[in-house]
Amino acid sequence: MAANPKDTALFVSTFFDELMRLGVSDVVVSPGSRSTALAMTAYEAQQRFPETINLYVDIDERGAAFFALGMAKASGKPVCAICTSGTAVANYYPAVIEAETSRVPLILLTGDRPERLQKLGAPQTCDQLNMYGNHVNRFQQMPLPSGDVQSVAFSRQIAREAVFAAMGYGSAAGVAHINFQFDEPLKPDFSVAGVFELGRSKVDQPFLCVHKQLSSHLTTQIKELMETGNVFVLAGEETCETAAEAQELISWATQNQIPLLADPLSGLRSFDEAVVIDNFDNIFRRKDIPLPNTVIRFGRYPISKPCTQALAKLRPIQIVVDPKETRDFNTATDIFIPSTPLDFVRSLVPAKPLANGIQEAFCKAWIELNEEEAKRISSVESQQSGYEGAFIRKLMQLIPESSCLFVANSMPIRAVDAFYTKQDKQIEVLCNRGQNGIDGTVSTALGAAQHFAQTTFLTGDYTLQHDLNALALQREILKYHGGEEAPSIVIVLMNNNGGAIFDMLPQKSEESYFERLFLAPQDVDFSSAAAAFRVPYKKVTTVAEFEAAYTSFVAKPGISLVEITLPLQGVTSRYAAYQQEEKQ
Image 1 (tube, rainbow, N blue to C red):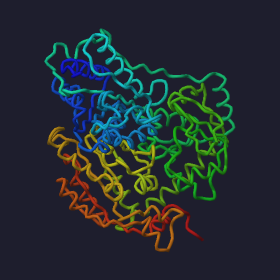
Image 2: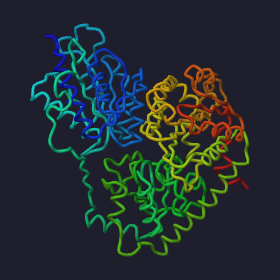
Image 3: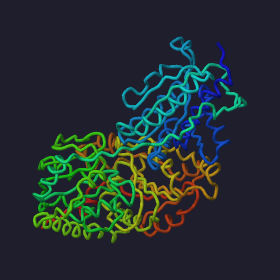
Image 4: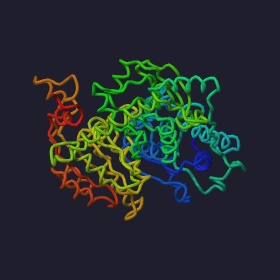
């Protein structure tokens, strides 16, 4: 039975209307045929409600999903991605898994052929039911579109359910996958009266956040543990979502003399406060570590491997504070608090400070060691070329206030952890740490950049090469999203021409397999790649050249690329002098 274009328009448009009413404002479309109604409705919504919907087009479904993920990561709001049927849907899979483990709200709207064409050899058709398995918070198979009152009500309800699932109400943020069946003709007819408005509720749909307070018994137990002294907080990724949250947490820690061991993704290194311990990766390499009796961990474990390994061996009492799960691969959780860090802290605010002599001495020892290591780390600034740390130090001096630093995995995030020391400069540091992978990272960074006037994307050559076609978004960003007012995105490429991280890992060897299988030099001419996508480009070898190139691109609309050349081998020795005590 042929589709009715007016029914299709009503069914899909009311779905989109409900998404907009619930605050969804960004949609990423990858062109395709079976998703015509979804794509055209998103376009129609953007034309009718330009202040409400932002429409992006990315021809690569894999990159498009990561681009949507980046926007959602930066904004904290669900972002929609639309694609056609078949392998297009499969190309979303890497981003689905990253969104799941990073708890990023995504709504995936996929086009599909009707049931009568399934498993009969129809082109571009595969089984899309529960395509992503248990990696999504919700899957919904939609019926063929209909414009009757009951069908429109159902369409709106599923839109609400998609937003609630993506936001993680009752669990954690993640992915909602809504699979739409469409029969031909595929084009919707938007001339029908009330195409977006039909079936709207008279009441706005608010987001309701219920904050849980700790029980009095649990609060007493935690306070008793803290009063024994030698307590620190391990502040992992997204410990603080805002500067105000960070300041409240720092105030609590200062009052109680509790060191805050701040991962670069915690949001705390933007505050130059004594209790913020930013160089703990170095401290855990020392023999004179002030050992904790109790560790309060916010969110996932930090990037620092020496820290994680030391705590696994030491096995202090560990209190894990996380909204959903322990994420404890060391199986060391003693108390699990299903809460946000801020709600946890507020539940513990005492009538008087908990700090005692033991805790004060413990905190003082951490502060003094942190200051020692800060001096060691800063000495890398004397290097002018060949050292990752020198370029990171200069970048953190130059990066504009209130901008975003998106960091790729592998060596870049480790370089940031090692050399980014705290400063009173508000910047948002983001990274795809859910899977620690390089898949789709360029697209994610460009997506996140849509919510900042200025973004710096720090990456290695493997990561940039893996998602190089994301640079094609240069045209989309400049032509449809601001022109001269478009976001400025400076890609800082630390190019060691291969997998330098393996120099730090057990695979390292002098045998021939090591270069062939792990270092794997690629010899990519990134200047030609930049030229292909009309991305302004400069190549540098010294810190002075980097400063000139970077500052010339800051505030320039669209994507720019600065390439830093670094040696492939010897990365361990380049870090060692700034991470370990010198041998006597």
